[in-house]
Image 1: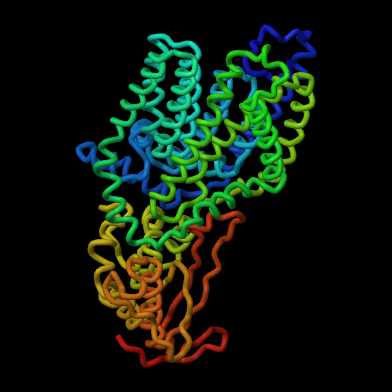
Image 2: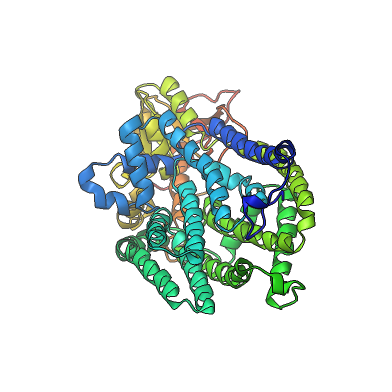
Length: 573
């Protein structure tokens, strides 16, 4: 057999050694080689750390006596921070060092997919490798210096261990499942809902078989995993709700779904259509078996019948739990938030296709050939997408370290880009965020933003920064503006907001950010300045979350013909 079917073992392969290598091993090496190559491309293209990664490194290098703060001041549970702290202790916190850790985690997702599928009796997970393994979100963000790749590994190990324990319960198996469950939930919050789905589905299969003690075992381990998350539920969730959610724009009901579709389509049109086809075939086969229309039902293996009972419960409970969590977060999601559900979709697609192959074993050579062709096509389509630089802020900071002089001022906006800028800037000129949020102590600054900055009228919140800008320009220094700059037409006043919650905009940080930027630009324009954009390196495929521009602002008494001169306007201070 070329594609290991559910319930089959390696002993069923009766091919001569040479033909076995050509027809099975070589195609597998092709797929695995493509997965490895794309991860190496992403690693070599990533560049400097962007703000989420810098935040992880900052938290991981905090003193050990702040351990509780370390474990609860991040959007990821303790396994990621514990691993990162250990890695930094051994190899340092340089970009090169921590990037290697991200690469190793990204590469480890490949054997994790294979191992997980093996527990379900599948020798090589062709479709999970092709559809999930070649997903650019998993390649890029699963290999960055964050814990998303670790979370996918935890999920795959947990689901494989759960199925193996269901089929062959033993004292050692229950112990392994306990460790795997704790690792899964402590590596990614979303795994809590996927674990609940897996354990409920396994419990339903055990009840169907009349093995109530096995069902009880899943319940007890599930409760233990849930108990390990109590500190986060008591401290992290209320803190996020109190601090983070109010400062973001309200999340429209279907926005997470739109972002997921964009994530899904990021892998290319061919992969998008192929996933629909392969998933549809598995879904139809599952429905056929549930309806009892399997012509060979008497020959259907016990594992097949267990899977038919397991898959619908696992898929729907996991899907409902995942999207409930997405809605509960109350913040705008991004590509990396949806990788766990992609993993769930990929696993259920693989298992559904395995059921179909069990019914059509003669089609296995065709499936291998199709998977290899699909791998080549998708890899070619995905390669430009994984040449993805995670930030340009490091390039800007190093450039300004050379050209900005003592007496100049660097202004970084939005304020959270300063998390990255501060890691790489080593110039003589002073620099400040707008507003100057104390992210050094608070790391992400959300708490200070909510409690100290946004309650102030916008002009008051940035008064110290405005004074620095004015004094720099008054004495002939330059202001290097890092971030978006929209010049105000002559006579147009800036957006002046009162303290949050504003009567119109409430706690929307985006509105306050626009107000702070417009007020600062208006102050500079009122002094009679020239504004020109500085050319900076623009690599292809840059993370839109951190792809800044640089503008040079100077006070010039005469209007140069080669630059844009803006006359003073009488604007309120």
